[in-house]
Image (cartoon, rainbow, N blue to C red; front, side, top):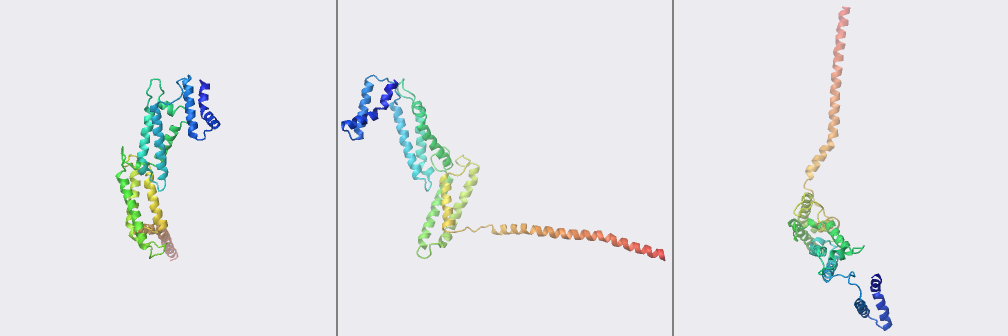
Length: 306
């Protein structure tokens, strides 16, 4: 059996050699020749237990291959700006289903191998398992589960609200940049800072709120970082606001902060002043009895000599 299998492995090279000798230049013609030779060898008495996939298993493997290619393309296209969770969620869930079909499927005939064994664990490399693990790790690292509702394909209400406000902020930036393009220098973004301040503050406040809620688990039921789509959107907005436009958000708690800081700064002065006054008072208390004693001694001396 082993020599016959070795012959099958050598069929492509043998077909190319024969094709070259016969004047077949097209690769398709050589492949067709290899197929014909394989059929003739099987007809000559090759055993029927060669590791060939059943038609159903082949269909499942092809579907997984096509799904992996489609998902890989989506991840690459949505890498910048990051929109993996929003754009590729459906493809990822479809791939999970296809992998599950392979793990559960069995060939049609009673003598056929289990599809899971043939496709997933029949060799050391285990390409299908490796690909599935890569997509799962990528999805978990992106924390995409924190963007969607439990057992749903829809974005959570808070995530949808954030993305709407994010798009509104970008629209405000673009609109005000177009309005001041002819009037101001490239480094002067006063109109952007003034007109988009409210929108940016709302977006920043919502992001901070989502972070606090997410630490205790929210609509998604996961306690982890926010999903990569939301984090990347906020990072982009903050960089535009602070670095590109050089805007700053005035702090509404300035007066309380100054008051508390001043109080803390004056504490050492109050401490040393109170210590000084207290020590001076003690000194007076200690000196007073000595004066009384000296006056009493003087009276005794006068009585003695009178």
